[in-house]
Length: 85
Image (cartoon, rainbow, N blue to C red; front, side, top):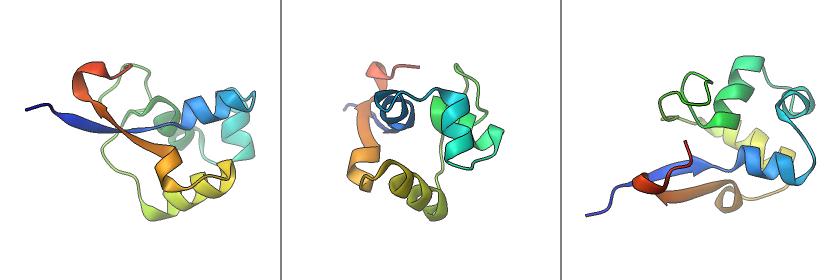
């Protein structure tokens, strides 16, 4: 049985709009550590850190409004073996 994991597309969506991490953090009005966790999909905000395990509804709403997308465009399911981090 394949193991699946949830992945946020924050970095991908921001880069499609020409934003780097610092611009995303500033324009989305997020704290630095929160922006890094969302950007890297890690619980400690490090590029190679442990996977992000939780996302609260308030953050989901902020991200969807900021990018102008629905949750289905922000979140994707991936095969654990295919994770980019």
